[in-house]
Length: 349
Image 1 (cartoon, helix red, strand yellow):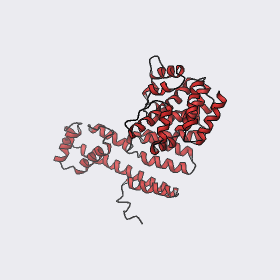
Image 2 (image 1 turned 90 degrees about the vertical axis):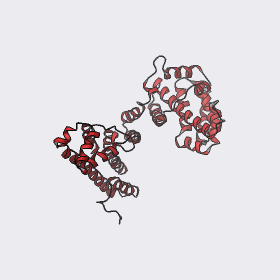
Image 3 (image 1 turned 180 degrees about the vertical axis):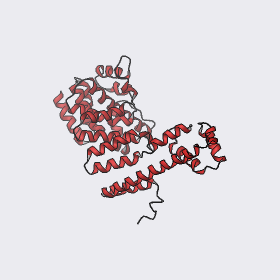
Image 4 (image 1 turned 60 degrees about the vertical axis):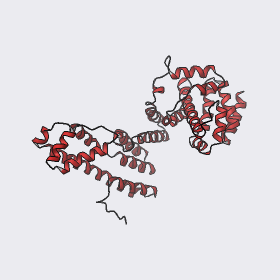
């Protein structure tokens, strides 16, 4: 028996118990707790707005204008404790996410704050665990609709990645692509395109003219780390669907650049005297650093670089692809990748 009664529990505490129930394989209990958390959250926010609206009905408060600071002064003079608490709780809940300075803005914010996206996310995960993919996607979509209300704003990327994965699972490749591209819409290098003078234009020009790839990875760096998985997945998807051309080369090149950038920074952080010179030097150093190698393994960097070589071969970048394959064959800690690289290298020559 829980020592804290449901009347005393906060919505987030109930949601935490729902997560525990899901982890234990009791989806019915998890769903019931999720609904309870959403209901309590909704009632609380509606109550906050009602307290505030009631206090604002006073002519004296209305005279204070729309400034929250000015209204608070009058509310304190009138000892309107419920309304003051509603404002203070709202400002605390919105801290670091929205800047609330006007009463009218606060009331609009409370209308949206009725949503509880964390609970919708967990509800989606419950449906996903039960194999109800369409219901899961509909709840994840609700999270995106109210992502500005997430306690941790970056959770929206987790939701987008999950929606892409589920879309691919049910064969909706357009949906899978759409959610990944939504993540990449915040990458200014990608959205700028390959117009004259752009980063991507210069990157493609170097890729086409430098056969060893050393200059390519030395000249270019990209640290949009949250987009790495999106670029990697798009590379896998486009290549699997038989696509060829610039779009495939661009997304796979950016995936490779982000991976190399991340590994280079990690190696330099571990040893300030170390500096990147070439991809072979980098891979050897990664193999000497367990934590860095673990990141590379968990994020399929070696498989990504192997796929990149396949994509380069399909696009006619033969010597560039062979260079990467040689490095993988000699240095990849993943035996499967090293072996595949050796075989592809022999057939490519």
